[in-house]
Length: 278
Length: 342
Image (cartoon, rainbow over all chains, first blue to last red; front, side):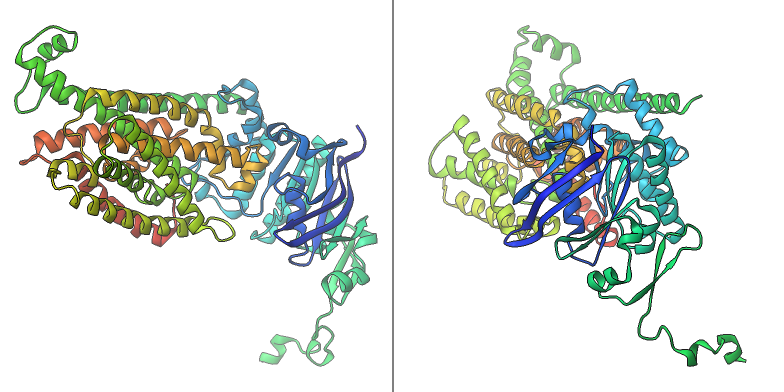
Protein backbone atom coordinates (compact mmCIF):
# COMPACT_ATOMS: atom_id res chain seq x y z
CA UNK A 1 0.00 0.00 0.00
CA UNK A 2 1.43 3.30 -1.03
CA UNK A 3 0.13 6.54 0.35
CA UNK A 4 -1.32 7.42 -3.05
CA UNK A 5 -4.96 6.28 -3.26
CA UNK A 6 -5.70 7.31 -6.83
CA UNK A 7 -3.29 8.38 -9.50
CA UNK A 8 -4.19 10.05 -12.78
CA UNK A 9 -1.61 9.49 -15.45
CA UNK A 10 -1.84 11.84 -18.45
CA UNK A 11 -5.60 11.45 -18.40
CA UNK A 12 -7.57 12.84 -21.36
CA UNK A 13 -11.35 12.57 -21.52
CA UNK A 14 -13.87 14.09 -23.91
CA UNK A 15 -17.48 14.06 -25.03
CA UNK A 16 -17.72 13.58 -28.79
CA UNK A 17 -15.06 15.72 -30.42
CA UNK A 18 -14.84 18.06 -27.49
CA UNK A 19 -11.93 17.42 -25.11
CA UNK A 20 -12.82 18.12 -21.49
CA UNK A 21 -9.77 16.85 -19.67
CA UNK A 22 -6.47 17.34 -21.37
CA UNK A 23 -3.52 15.25 -20.18
CA UNK A 24 -4.08 15.44 -16.42
CA UNK A 25 -1.47 14.25 -13.95
CA UNK A 26 -2.57 14.12 -10.34
CA UNK A 27 -1.92 12.01 -7.25
CA UNK A 28 -4.58 11.89 -4.57
CA UNK A 29 -3.19 11.04 -1.11
CA UNK A 30 -4.66 8.13 0.83
CA UNK A 31 -6.58 8.91 4.00
CA UNK A 32 -6.80 12.63 3.20
CA UNK A 33 -9.48 15.05 2.12
CA UNK A 34 -9.02 16.52 -1.33
CA UNK A 35 -11.20 19.35 -2.60
CA UNK A 36 -11.40 20.21 -6.30
CA UNK A 37 -12.36 23.76 -7.22
CA UNK A 38 -12.59 25.65 -10.48
CA UNK A 39 -14.88 27.82 -12.59
CA UNK A 40 -18.00 26.31 -14.20
CA UNK A 41 -17.32 23.88 -17.06
CA UNK A 42 -13.64 23.46 -16.20
CA UNK A 43 -13.99 19.69 -16.03
CA UNK A 44 -14.36 19.11 -12.27
CA UNK A 45 -17.36 16.79 -12.51
CA UNK A 46 -15.87 15.09 -15.55
CA UNK A 47 -12.75 14.37 -13.53
CA UNK A 48 -14.83 12.77 -10.79
CA UNK A 49 -16.78 10.71 -13.32
CA UNK A 50 -13.57 9.55 -14.99
CA UNK A 51 -12.21 8.47 -11.61
CA UNK A 52 -15.27 6.31 -10.99
CA UNK A 53 -15.12 4.71 -14.45
CA UNK A 54 -18.22 6.44 -15.75
CA UNK A 55 -16.23 7.89 -18.61
CA UNK A 56 -13.67 6.04 -20.63
CA UNK A 57 -10.43 7.96 -21.07
CA UNK A 58 -9.31 8.86 -24.59
CA UNK A 59 -5.79 8.36 -23.46
CA UNK A 60 -3.97 8.04 -20.17
CA UNK A 61 -4.97 6.01 -17.14
CA UNK A 62 -6.60 6.14 -13.74
CA UNK A 63 -4.71 3.93 -11.30
CA UNK A 64 -6.06 2.52 -8.05
CA UNK A 65 -3.18 1.01 -6.07
CA UNK A 66 -1.30 0.82 -9.34
CA UNK A 67 -4.08 -1.07 -11.18
CA UNK A 68 -5.96 0.55 -14.03
CA UNK A 69 -9.59 0.98 -12.98
CA UNK A 70 -10.91 0.21 -16.46
CA UNK A 71 -9.33 -3.23 -16.18
CA UNK A 72 -11.22 -3.97 -12.94
CA UNK A 73 -14.62 -5.69 -12.70
CA UNK A 74 -17.36 -3.08 -12.05
CA UNK A 75 -18.52 -4.72 -8.83
CA UNK A 76 -14.99 -5.06 -7.50
CA UNK A 77 -14.25 -1.40 -8.21
CA UNK A 78 -17.52 -0.43 -6.52
CA UNK A 79 -16.26 -2.11 -3.35
CA UNK A 80 -13.26 0.25 -3.38
CA UNK A 81 -14.59 3.55 -4.74
CA UNK A 82 -17.98 5.05 -3.87
CA UNK A 83 -19.51 7.91 -5.86
CA UNK A 84 -22.18 10.37 -4.82
CA UNK A 85 -23.30 12.21 -7.99
CA UNK A 86 -24.39 15.83 -7.91
CA UNK A 87 -28.16 15.42 -7.84
CA UNK A 88 -29.01 11.79 -7.22
CA UNK A 89 -32.60 10.63 -7.85
CA UNK A 90 -34.38 8.64 -5.15
CA UNK A 91 -37.11 6.33 -6.47
CA UNK A 92 -40.54 7.56 -5.38
CA UNK A 93 -41.92 5.99 -2.22
CA UNK A 94 -38.59 4.57 -1.02
CA UNK A 95 -37.78 4.59 2.69
CA UNK A 96 -34.48 5.79 4.13
CA UNK A 97 -33.63 2.28 5.23
CA UNK A 98 -34.28 0.84 1.74
CA UNK A 99 -32.22 3.53 0.05
CA UNK A 100 -29.26 3.06 2.40
CA UNK A 101 -29.53 -0.73 1.90
CA UNK A 102 -28.96 -0.22 -1.82
CA UNK A 103 -25.42 0.79 -0.98
CA UNK A 104 -24.83 -2.92 -0.35
CA UNK A 105 -25.36 -3.71 -4.05
CA UNK A 106 -21.71 -4.34 -4.98
CA UNK A 107 -21.31 -6.70 -2.01
CA UNK A 108 -24.12 -8.99 -3.07
CA UNK A 109 -24.15 -11.70 -5.70
CA UNK A 110 -26.82 -12.11 -8.38
CA UNK A 111 -29.15 -14.09 -6.14
CA UNK A 112 -27.15 -13.15 -3.05
CA UNK A 113 -29.08 -13.35 0.16
CA UNK A 114 -29.06 -10.53 2.63
CA UNK A 115 -26.51 -11.35 5.31
CA UNK A 116 -25.90 -10.30 8.89
CA UNK A 117 -22.94 -8.17 7.80
CA UNK A 118 -25.16 -6.25 5.39
CA UNK A 119 -27.46 -5.31 8.26
CA UNK A 120 -24.39 -4.34 10.29
CA UNK A 121 -23.07 -2.11 7.48
CA UNK A 122 -26.44 -0.39 7.06
CA UNK A 123 -26.77 0.14 10.83
CA UNK A 124 -23.27 1.57 11.00
CA UNK A 125 -23.97 3.95 8.10
CA UNK A 126 -27.20 5.12 9.73
CA UNK A 127 -25.44 5.63 13.05
CA UNK A 128 -22.49 7.59 11.61
CA UNK A 129 -24.78 9.96 9.72
CA UNK A 130 -27.28 10.25 12.55
CA UNK A 131 -30.08 9.05 10.28
CA UNK A 132 -31.09 6.04 12.42
CA UNK A 133 -34.24 7.77 13.73
CA UNK A 134 -35.28 8.47 10.11
CA UNK A 135 -34.94 4.82 8.99
CA UNK A 136 -38.63 4.23 8.31
CA UNK A 137 -39.38 7.68 6.87
CA UNK A 138 -39.86 8.26 3.15
CA UNK A 139 -36.87 9.95 1.50
CA UNK A 140 -39.12 12.45 -0.31
CA UNK A 141 -40.51 13.70 3.04
CA UNK A 142 -37.08 14.72 4.38
CA UNK A 143 -35.47 18.16 4.41
CA UNK A 144 -32.59 18.86 2.03
CA UNK A 145 -29.98 18.47 4.77
CA UNK A 146 -31.46 15.21 6.02
CA UNK A 147 -31.69 13.86 2.50
CA UNK A 148 -28.05 14.62 1.81
CA UNK A 149 -27.07 12.78 5.00
CA UNK A 150 -29.13 9.81 3.81
CA UNK A 151 -27.30 9.77 0.47
CA UNK A 152 -24.00 9.89 2.30
CA UNK A 153 -25.24 7.02 4.49
CA UNK A 154 -25.91 5.03 1.32
CA UNK A 155 -22.38 5.69 0.10
CA UNK A 156 -21.08 4.64 3.55
CA UNK A 157 -23.03 1.38 3.47
CA UNK A 158 -21.04 0.63 0.34
CA UNK A 159 -18.00 0.45 2.66
CA UNK A 160 -15.41 1.78 0.26
CA UNK A 161 -12.09 3.20 1.34
CA UNK A 162 -12.41 6.01 -1.22
CA UNK A 163 -15.42 8.30 -1.46
CA UNK A 164 -15.95 10.68 -4.39
CA UNK A 165 -18.57 13.40 -3.94
CA UNK A 166 -19.76 15.86 -6.56
CA UNK A 167 -20.76 19.08 -4.81
CA UNK A 168 -22.22 17.41 -1.72
CA UNK A 169 -23.27 20.77 -0.28
CA UNK A 170 -25.19 22.22 -3.24
CA UNK A 171 -28.71 23.44 -2.46
CA UNK A 172 -28.08 23.21 1.28
CA UNK A 173 -28.38 26.01 3.83
CA UNK A 174 -25.06 27.09 5.29
CA UNK A 175 -25.65 25.24 8.58
CA UNK A 176 -26.35 22.03 6.66
CA UNK A 177 -23.29 22.60 4.49
CA UNK A 178 -21.12 22.74 7.62
CA UNK A 179 -22.93 19.71 9.02
CA UNK A 180 -22.19 17.64 5.89
CA UNK A 181 -18.54 18.73 5.72
CA UNK A 182 -18.07 18.03 9.43
CA UNK A 183 -19.55 14.59 8.90
CA UNK A 184 -17.16 13.87 6.03
CA UNK A 185 -14.27 15.03 8.19
CA UNK A 186 -15.41 12.68 10.98
CA UNK A 187 -15.35 9.80 8.52
CA UNK A 188 -11.93 10.75 7.35
CA UNK A 189 -10.54 11.04 10.87
CA UNK A 190 -12.28 8.00 12.39
CA UNK A 191 -12.18 5.52 9.52
CA UNK A 192 -9.38 6.88 7.40
CA UNK A 193 -11.68 7.19 4.39
CA UNK A 194 -10.04 8.98 1.48
CA UNK A 195 -12.38 11.78 0.46
CA UNK A 196 -12.31 13.54 -2.89
CA UNK A 197 -14.96 16.16 -3.43
CA UNK A 198 -15.86 18.90 -5.87
CA UNK A 199 -16.81 22.05 -3.96
CA UNK A 200 -18.14 25.38 -5.15
CA UNK A 201 -17.34 27.39 -2.06
CA UNK A 202 -13.63 28.22 -2.05
CA UNK A 203 -13.50 29.17 1.62
CA UNK A 204 -15.12 25.93 2.73
CA UNK A 205 -12.84 24.00 0.37
CA UNK A 206 -9.74 25.66 1.87
CA UNK A 207 -11.05 25.08 5.36
CA UNK A 208 -11.88 21.37 5.10
CA UNK A 209 -9.36 20.09 2.55
CA UNK A 210 -5.89 18.73 3.20
CA UNK A 211 -5.16 19.01 -0.51
CA UNK A 212 -6.70 21.71 -2.66
CA UNK A 213 -6.81 21.26 -6.44
CA UNK A 214 -7.65 24.21 -8.69
CA UNK A 215 -8.71 23.32 -12.23
CA UNK A 216 -8.98 25.53 -15.30
CA UNK A 217 -9.81 24.58 -18.89
CA UNK A 218 -9.47 20.84 -18.37
CA UNK A 219 -6.07 21.08 -16.72
CA UNK A 220 -4.74 21.21 -13.18
CA UNK A 221 -3.84 24.80 -12.51
CA UNK A 222 -2.48 24.24 -9.04
CA UNK A 223 -2.53 21.44 -6.47
CA UNK A 224 -1.18 21.53 -2.93
CA UNK A 225 -1.87 22.75 0.58
CA UNK A 226 -4.73 25.26 0.74
CA UNK A 227 -2.38 28.09 1.71
CA UNK A 228 -0.23 27.54 -1.35
CA UNK A 229 -3.19 27.13 -3.73
CA UNK A 230 -5.75 29.66 -2.49
CA UNK A 231 -3.74 32.77 -3.38
CA UNK A 232 -4.73 35.99 -5.09
CA UNK A 233 -2.93 35.15 -8.33
CA UNK A 234 -4.83 31.81 -8.67
CA UNK A 235 -8.17 33.57 -8.18
CA UNK A 236 -7.36 35.94 -11.02
CA UNK A 237 -6.08 33.20 -13.33
CA UNK A 238 -8.73 30.56 -12.64
CA UNK A 239 -11.83 32.61 -11.79
CA UNK A 240 -10.93 36.01 -13.20
CA UNK A 241 -11.69 37.35 -9.75
CA UNK A 242 -9.98 40.14 -7.88
CA UNK A 243 -9.94 39.14 -4.21
CA UNK A 244 -7.93 39.50 -1.04
CA UNK A 245 -6.76 36.58 1.06
CA UNK A 246 -7.07 36.88 4.82
CA UNK A 247 -6.65 34.35 7.61
CA UNK A 248 -9.86 32.62 8.69
CA UNK A 249 -10.28 33.82 12.31
CA UNK A 250 -11.41 30.34 13.43
CA UNK A 251 -8.92 28.01 11.72
CA UNK A 252 -6.24 30.40 10.45
CA UNK A 253 -6.66 28.77 7.04
CA UNK A 254 -6.69 31.10 4.01
CA UNK A 255 -10.01 32.79 3.31
CA UNK A 256 -10.78 34.83 0.25
CA UNK A 257 -12.78 38.04 0.21
CA UNK A 258 -13.84 39.30 -3.24
CA UNK A 259 -13.20 42.93 -4.05
CA UNK A 260 -15.98 43.49 -6.60
CA UNK A 261 -16.68 46.78 -8.34
CA UNK A 262 -18.37 48.39 -5.34
CA UNK A 263 -16.26 46.75 -2.64
CA UNK A 264 -14.39 49.77 -1.36
CA UNK A 265 -16.81 52.62 -1.83
CA UNK A 266 -16.07 54.95 1.14
CA UNK A 267 -19.05 57.21 0.50
CA UNK A 268 -21.58 54.38 0.94
CA UNK A 269 -19.65 52.40 3.51
CA UNK A 270 -19.71 55.34 5.91
CA UNK A 271 -23.50 55.59 6.02
CA UNK A 272 -25.24 53.29 8.42
CA UNK A 273 -28.50 52.17 6.77
CA UNK A 274 -30.55 52.72 9.91
CA UNK A 275 -29.15 56.21 10.45
CA UNK A 276 -30.07 56.99 6.89
CA UNK A 277 -33.64 55.84 7.42
CA UNK A 278 -34.21 58.08 10.45
CA UNK B 1 -31.83 -3.10 21.59
CA UNK B 2 -28.97 -2.25 19.25
CA UNK B 3 -29.39 -0.53 15.92
CA UNK B 4 -28.25 -3.66 14.07
CA UNK B 5 -30.97 -5.70 15.74
CA UNK B 6 -33.50 -2.96 14.95
CA UNK B 7 -32.46 -2.98 11.33
CA UNK B 8 -32.63 -6.77 11.13
CA UNK B 9 -36.10 -6.90 12.67
CA UNK B 10 -37.27 -4.06 10.41
CA UNK B 11 -36.09 -6.02 7.41
CA UNK B 12 -37.69 -9.25 8.59
CA UNK B 13 -40.97 -7.47 9.17
CA UNK B 14 -40.94 -6.06 5.67
CA UNK B 15 -40.04 -9.41 4.17
CA UNK B 16 -42.96 -11.02 5.99
CA UNK B 17 -45.34 -8.35 4.74
CA UNK B 18 -44.06 -8.83 1.20
CA UNK B 19 -44.66 -12.59 1.39
CA UNK B 20 -48.17 -11.97 2.66
CA UNK B 21 -48.84 -9.55 -0.20
CA UNK B 22 -47.56 -12.04 -2.79
CA UNK B 23 -49.59 -14.85 -1.21
CA UNK B 24 -52.72 -12.69 -1.35
CA UNK B 25 -52.14 -11.97 -5.04
CA UNK B 26 -51.56 -15.67 -5.74
CA UNK B 27 -54.77 -16.53 -3.89
CA UNK B 28 -56.68 -13.95 -5.94
CA UNK B 29 -55.27 -15.49 -9.11
CA UNK B 30 -56.33 -18.99 -8.02
CA UNK B 31 -59.79 -17.72 -7.20
CA UNK B 32 -60.08 -16.07 -10.60
CA UNK B 33 -58.97 -19.21 -12.40
CA UNK B 34 -61.36 -21.35 -10.33
CA UNK B 35 -64.26 -19.03 -11.19
CA UNK B 36 -63.37 -19.10 -14.89
CA UNK B 37 -63.34 -22.91 -14.80
CA UNK B 38 -66.58 -23.27 -12.88
CA UNK B 39 -68.77 -20.50 -14.23
CA UNK B 40 -69.73 -19.70 -17.82
CA UNK B 41 -73.01 -20.10 -19.69
CA UNK B 42 -73.71 -22.73 -17.07
CA UNK B 43 -72.33 -23.29 -13.59
CA UNK B 44 -70.30 -26.46 -13.04
CA UNK B 45 -70.08 -27.80 -9.46
CA UNK B 46 -66.51 -27.52 -8.05
CA UNK B 47 -66.22 -31.30 -7.61
CA UNK B 48 -67.03 -31.88 -11.28
CA UNK B 49 -64.40 -29.29 -12.23
CA UNK B 50 -61.81 -31.09 -10.10
CA UNK B 51 -62.75 -34.47 -11.49
CA UNK B 52 -62.56 -33.19 -15.07
CA UNK B 53 -59.14 -31.63 -14.50
CA UNK B 54 -57.92 -34.92 -13.02
CA UNK B 55 -58.95 -36.69 -16.22
CA UNK B 56 -62.34 -38.17 -15.30
CA UNK B 57 -64.72 -38.21 -18.27
CA UNK B 58 -67.65 -36.04 -17.27
CA UNK B 59 -69.37 -35.90 -20.63
CA UNK B 60 -70.53 -32.46 -21.75
CA UNK B 61 -68.82 -30.77 -18.81
CA UNK B 62 -65.49 -32.21 -19.95
CA UNK B 63 -65.79 -30.38 -23.26
CA UNK B 64 -66.86 -27.12 -21.63
CA UNK B 65 -64.04 -27.18 -19.14
CA UNK B 66 -61.17 -28.67 -21.12
CA UNK B 67 -61.81 -27.00 -24.47
CA UNK B 68 -63.64 -23.77 -23.62
CA UNK B 69 -62.69 -22.69 -20.11
CA UNK B 70 -59.27 -24.14 -19.23
CA UNK B 71 -57.37 -22.69 -22.25
CA UNK B 72 -59.03 -19.34 -21.55
CA UNK B 73 -57.92 -19.29 -17.92
CA UNK B 74 -54.40 -20.54 -18.66
CA UNK B 75 -53.72 -18.15 -21.56
CA UNK B 76 -55.21 -15.22 -19.61
CA UNK B 77 -53.02 -15.90 -16.59
CA UNK B 78 -49.82 -16.44 -18.59
CA UNK B 79 -50.33 -13.50 -20.93
CA UNK B 80 -51.28 -11.27 -18.00
CA UNK B 81 -48.12 -12.26 -16.12
CA UNK B 82 -45.98 -11.54 -19.21
CA UNK B 83 -47.62 -8.14 -19.74
CA UNK B 84 -47.32 -7.26 -16.06
CA UNK B 85 -43.66 -8.13 -15.73
CA UNK B 86 -42.66 -6.65 -19.10
CA UNK B 87 -44.58 -3.47 -18.36
CA UNK B 88 -43.15 -2.81 -14.93
CA UNK B 89 -39.65 -3.43 -16.28
CA UNK B 90 -40.03 -0.59 -18.78
CA UNK B 91 -41.66 1.66 -16.20
CA UNK B 92 -38.80 1.07 -13.78
CA UNK B 93 -36.03 1.40 -16.36
CA UNK B 94 -37.39 4.66 -17.80
CA UNK B 95 -38.55 5.95 -14.41
CA UNK B 96 -42.02 6.77 -15.72
CA UNK B 97 -45.29 4.84 -15.51
CA UNK B 98 -46.28 6.20 -18.92
CA UNK B 99 -43.30 4.41 -20.46
CA UNK B 100 -45.09 1.07 -20.51
CA UNK B 101 -44.83 -1.01 -23.69
CA UNK B 102 -48.55 -0.75 -24.51
CA UNK B 103 -48.36 3.04 -24.49
CA UNK B 104 -45.10 3.57 -26.32
CA UNK B 105 -46.00 1.25 -29.20
CA UNK B 106 -44.13 -1.97 -28.48
CA UNK B 107 -47.35 -3.97 -28.11
CA UNK B 108 -48.80 -2.30 -31.20
CA UNK B 109 -45.63 -3.17 -33.11
CA UNK B 110 -45.83 -6.81 -32.11
CA UNK B 111 -49.53 -6.82 -32.87
CA UNK B 112 -49.14 -5.23 -36.32
CA UNK B 113 -46.41 -7.72 -37.20
CA UNK B 114 -48.55 -10.66 -36.06
CA UNK B 115 -51.51 -9.46 -38.13
CA UNK B 116 -49.27 -8.93 -41.13
CA UNK B 117 -47.97 -12.50 -40.83
CA UNK B 118 -51.42 -13.99 -40.45
CA UNK B 119 -53.38 -11.89 -42.96
CA UNK B 120 -50.83 -11.20 -45.66
CA UNK B 121 -48.41 -14.11 -45.41
CA UNK B 122 -50.92 -16.73 -44.18
CA UNK B 123 -48.54 -17.89 -41.48
CA UNK B 124 -49.46 -19.33 -38.11
CA UNK B 125 -47.93 -20.81 -34.95
CA UNK B 126 -44.49 -20.14 -33.51
CA UNK B 127 -43.21 -18.16 -36.50
CA UNK B 128 -45.84 -15.51 -35.77
CA UNK B 129 -44.55 -15.16 -32.22
CA UNK B 130 -40.98 -14.91 -33.43
CA UNK B 131 -41.86 -12.17 -35.93
CA UNK B 132 -43.86 -10.38 -33.24
CA UNK B 133 -40.85 -10.41 -30.90
CA UNK B 134 -38.59 -9.13 -33.68
CA UNK B 135 -41.07 -6.36 -34.49
CA UNK B 136 -41.34 -5.42 -30.81
CA UNK B 137 -37.56 -5.11 -30.59
CA UNK B 138 -37.50 -3.18 -33.87
CA UNK B 139 -40.06 -0.69 -32.55
CA UNK B 140 -38.12 -0.33 -29.28
CA UNK B 141 -34.96 0.41 -31.25
CA UNK B 142 -36.78 2.83 -33.58
CA UNK B 143 -38.25 4.80 -30.67
CA UNK B 144 -34.87 4.93 -29.02
CA UNK B 145 -33.19 6.24 -32.17
CA UNK B 146 -35.92 8.79 -32.90
CA UNK B 147 -35.91 10.05 -29.32
CA UNK B 148 -32.11 10.15 -29.17
CA UNK B 149 -30.72 13.63 -28.91
CA UNK B 150 -27.50 13.47 -26.98
CA UNK B 151 -29.15 10.94 -24.65
CA UNK B 152 -32.62 9.44 -24.60
CA UNK B 153 -34.77 11.55 -22.31
CA UNK B 154 -37.89 9.99 -20.80
CA UNK B 155 -40.57 12.44 -21.90
CA UNK B 156 -39.42 12.65 -25.53
CA UNK B 157 -39.16 8.90 -25.73
CA UNK B 158 -42.73 8.52 -24.49
CA UNK B 159 -44.14 11.09 -26.92
CA UNK B 160 -42.32 9.51 -29.87
CA UNK B 161 -43.63 6.14 -28.70
CA UNK B 162 -47.23 7.34 -28.52
CA UNK B 163 -46.94 8.65 -32.09
CA UNK B 164 -45.49 5.38 -33.35
CA UNK B 165 -48.14 3.45 -31.49
CA UNK B 166 -50.90 5.42 -33.23
CA UNK B 167 -49.34 4.75 -36.65
CA UNK B 168 -48.97 1.06 -35.98
CA UNK B 169 -52.56 0.75 -34.77
CA UNK B 170 -53.88 2.34 -37.96
CA UNK B 171 -51.63 -0.02 -39.94
CA UNK B 172 -53.19 -2.97 -38.10
CA UNK B 173 -56.68 -1.60 -38.82
CA UNK B 174 -55.78 -1.26 -42.51
CA UNK B 175 -54.45 -4.83 -42.65
CA UNK B 176 -57.69 -6.11 -41.15
CA UNK B 177 -59.75 -4.36 -43.83
CA UNK B 178 -57.68 -6.20 -46.44
CA UNK B 179 -58.86 -9.55 -45.15
CA UNK B 180 -62.46 -9.95 -46.32
CA UNK B 181 -63.00 -13.25 -44.55
CA UNK B 182 -61.84 -11.80 -41.27
CA UNK B 183 -64.39 -11.99 -38.51
CA UNK B 184 -65.07 -9.25 -36.02
CA UNK B 185 -63.95 -11.56 -33.20
CA UNK B 186 -60.49 -11.94 -34.67
CA UNK B 187 -60.24 -8.27 -35.56
CA UNK B 188 -61.02 -7.36 -31.97
CA UNK B 189 -58.30 -9.69 -30.79
CA UNK B 190 -55.67 -7.77 -32.71
CA UNK B 191 -57.08 -4.34 -31.96
CA UNK B 192 -57.69 -4.53 -28.21
CA UNK B 193 -56.80 -8.05 -27.16
CA UNK B 194 -58.97 -11.08 -26.52
CA UNK B 195 -58.68 -14.67 -25.35
CA UNK B 196 -61.73 -15.85 -27.27
CA UNK B 197 -60.87 -19.07 -29.05
CA UNK B 198 -57.70 -19.58 -26.98
CA UNK B 199 -56.14 -23.02 -27.34
CA UNK B 200 -53.98 -24.90 -24.89
CA UNK B 201 -51.28 -25.26 -27.57
CA UNK B 202 -50.62 -21.51 -27.21
CA UNK B 203 -49.63 -22.03 -23.59
CA UNK B 204 -46.27 -23.66 -24.26
CA UNK B 205 -44.56 -20.71 -26.02
CA UNK B 206 -45.94 -18.38 -23.36
CA UNK B 207 -44.70 -20.63 -20.59
CA UNK B 208 -41.26 -20.79 -22.19
CA UNK B 209 -41.14 -17.01 -22.64
CA UNK B 210 -42.14 -16.45 -19.05
CA UNK B 211 -39.58 -19.01 -17.89
CA UNK B 212 -36.65 -17.69 -19.90
CA UNK B 213 -37.23 -13.93 -20.04
CA UNK B 214 -38.74 -13.90 -16.56
CA UNK B 215 -35.65 -15.56 -15.07
CA UNK B 216 -33.37 -13.12 -16.87
CA UNK B 217 -35.32 -10.21 -15.39
CA UNK B 218 -35.44 -11.72 -11.91
CA UNK B 219 -31.70 -12.31 -12.03
CA UNK B 220 -31.16 -8.66 -13.02
CA UNK B 221 -33.78 -7.22 -10.66
CA UNK B 222 -31.32 -5.54 -8.28
CA UNK B 223 -29.32 -4.07 -11.15
CA UNK B 224 -32.58 -2.82 -12.67
CA UNK B 225 -33.59 -1.10 -9.46
CA UNK B 226 -30.17 0.44 -9.08
CA UNK B 227 -30.33 1.68 -12.67
CA UNK B 228 -33.56 3.47 -11.76
CA UNK B 229 -31.48 5.78 -9.54
CA UNK B 230 -29.66 7.19 -12.56
CA UNK B 231 -26.70 6.01 -14.63
CA UNK B 232 -24.06 7.74 -12.49
CA UNK B 233 -25.33 6.21 -9.29
CA UNK B 234 -25.73 2.77 -10.86
CA UNK B 235 -22.23 2.81 -12.30
CA UNK B 236 -20.88 3.94 -8.94
CA UNK B 237 -22.57 0.92 -7.37
CA UNK B 238 -20.93 -1.44 -9.83
CA UNK B 239 -23.75 -2.07 -12.30
CA UNK B 240 -22.51 -2.82 -15.84
CA UNK B 241 -25.01 -0.32 -17.28
CA UNK B 242 -24.91 -1.10 -21.01
CA UNK B 243 -25.16 -4.86 -20.58
CA UNK B 244 -27.93 -4.69 -18.03
CA UNK B 245 -29.95 -2.24 -20.11
CA UNK B 246 -29.77 -4.40 -23.23
CA UNK B 247 -30.57 -7.59 -21.32
CA UNK B 248 -33.52 -6.02 -19.56
CA UNK B 249 -35.01 -4.43 -22.69
CA UNK B 250 -34.71 -7.61 -24.76
CA UNK B 251 -36.30 -9.70 -22.00
CA UNK B 252 -39.14 -7.23 -21.42
CA UNK B 253 -39.89 -6.85 -25.13
CA UNK B 254 -39.79 -10.65 -25.43
CA UNK B 255 -42.39 -11.06 -22.69
CA UNK B 256 -44.72 -8.44 -24.16
CA UNK B 257 -44.36 -9.68 -27.73
CA UNK B 258 -45.04 -13.34 -26.87
CA UNK B 259 -48.08 -12.35 -24.85
CA UNK B 260 -49.30 -10.12 -27.68
CA UNK B 261 -48.87 -12.92 -30.21
CA UNK B 262 -51.08 -15.14 -28.04
CA UNK B 263 -53.78 -12.78 -26.81
CA UNK B 264 -53.37 -9.60 -28.82
CA UNK B 265 -52.39 -6.28 -27.25
CA UNK B 266 -54.66 -6.59 -24.20
CA UNK B 267 -55.22 -2.93 -23.47
CA UNK B 268 -53.45 -1.29 -20.53
CA UNK B 269 -52.45 -4.47 -18.64
CA UNK B 270 -48.72 -3.76 -18.96
CA UNK B 271 -49.45 -0.16 -18.00
CA UNK B 272 -51.67 -0.89 -14.99
CA UNK B 273 -49.97 -3.85 -13.32
CA UNK B 274 -46.83 -2.10 -12.02
CA UNK B 275 -48.51 0.91 -10.40
CA UNK B 276 -51.28 -1.28 -8.93
CA UNK B 277 -48.73 -3.75 -7.55
CA UNK B 278 -46.64 -0.87 -6.14
CA UNK B 279 -49.67 0.39 -4.22
CA UNK B 280 -50.71 -3.09 -3.04
CA UNK B 281 -47.23 -3.88 -1.69
CA UNK B 282 -46.43 -0.35 -0.53
CA UNK B 283 -43.22 -0.30 -2.55
CA UNK B 284 -41.76 -3.19 -0.61
CA UNK B 285 -38.94 -4.78 -2.61
CA UNK B 286 -38.72 -5.63 -6.32
CA UNK B 287 -41.95 -5.10 -8.26
CA UNK B 288 -41.32 -7.78 -10.90
CA UNK B 289 -43.11 -10.70 -9.23
CA UNK B 290 -45.94 -8.61 -7.75
CA UNK B 291 -46.57 -6.98 -11.15
CA UNK B 292 -46.58 -10.37 -12.91
CA UNK B 293 -49.17 -11.70 -10.45
CA UNK B 294 -51.19 -8.49 -10.67
CA UNK B 295 -51.19 -8.70 -14.48
CA UNK B 296 -52.39 -12.30 -14.33
CA UNK B 297 -55.16 -11.45 -11.85
CA UNK B 298 -56.15 -8.46 -13.97
CA UNK B 299 -56.53 -10.40 -17.23
CA UNK B 300 -58.22 -13.42 -15.64
CA UNK B 301 -60.78 -11.36 -13.71
CA UNK B 302 -61.34 -8.87 -16.55
CA UNK B 303 -62.01 -11.77 -18.91
CA UNK B 304 -64.35 -13.36 -16.40
CA UNK B 305 -66.17 -10.06 -16.01
CA UNK B 306 -66.39 -9.63 -19.79
CA UNK B 307 -67.81 -13.12 -20.24
CA UNK B 308 -70.10 -13.57 -17.28
CA UNK B 309 -70.70 -10.47 -15.18
CA UNK B 310 -71.56 -7.93 -17.87
CA UNK B 311 -74.89 -7.94 -19.76
CA UNK B 312 -73.24 -8.65 -23.11
CA UNK B 313 -70.05 -10.64 -23.76
CA UNK B 314 -67.00 -8.47 -24.27
CA UNK B 315 -63.44 -9.46 -25.14
CA UNK B 316 -60.99 -8.94 -22.27
CA UNK B 317 -59.22 -5.99 -23.92
CA UNK B 318 -62.41 -3.92 -23.87
CA UNK B 319 -62.81 -4.50 -20.13
CA UNK B 320 -59.17 -3.71 -19.29
CA UNK B 321 -59.39 -0.69 -21.58
CA UNK B 322 -62.34 0.65 -19.63
CA UNK B 323 -60.37 0.12 -16.40
CA UNK B 324 -57.13 1.52 -17.75
CA UNK B 325 -58.23 4.66 -19.55
CA UNK B 326 -59.36 6.61 -16.46
CA UNK B 327 -56.15 5.61 -14.70
CA UNK B 328 -54.13 6.93 -17.64
CA UNK B 329 -55.95 10.27 -17.44
CA UNK B 330 -55.41 10.39 -13.68
CA UNK B 331 -51.72 9.66 -14.05
CA UNK B 332 -51.16 12.29 -16.73
CA UNK B 333 -53.06 14.87 -14.66
CA UNK B 334 -51.04 14.02 -11.55
CA UNK B 335 -47.68 13.88 -13.31
CA UNK B 336 -48.20 17.27 -14.87
CA UNK B 337 -48.55 18.65 -11.39
CA UNK B 338 -45.80 16.88 -9.54
CA UNK B 339 -43.61 15.06 -12.06
CA UNK B 340 -43.86 11.87 -10.00
CA UNK B 341 -42.97 8.35 -11.11
CA UNK B 342 -44.25 4.85 -10.42
